[in-house]
Length: 127
Image 1 (cartoon, rainbow, N blue to C red):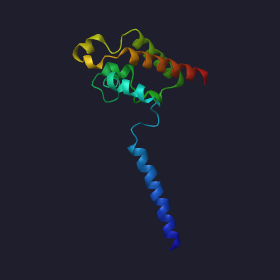
Image 2 (image 1 turned 90 degrees about the horizontal axis):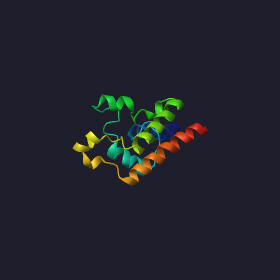
Image 3 (image 1 turned 90 degrees about the vertical axis):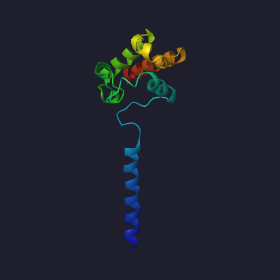
């Protein structure tokens, strides 16, 4: 009888950890990002740059859901591209913003995302 109680505890703990892994909003390969960065990306980038997007060109160029799966060199390149495109005002595209002006990055968001992407690339280079 004592063994069944121990088994129940072990089984319950295992079930909890397994279900928690399915409930998580991000896959293990998705990069961790500060809350403000994630908020800006969700507002202005994620709609086109994700696996489920209808915009084939955008998701082929950058898919935030699979960014963590890339090789170190490809991640560095993607982070540098993100910083450059945002810094130069190429993302989100002007044509897109004509239809969705609320997706425009603020000056603060532009600086935040640019610095984040540059720091991520630098951190990978340092490793």
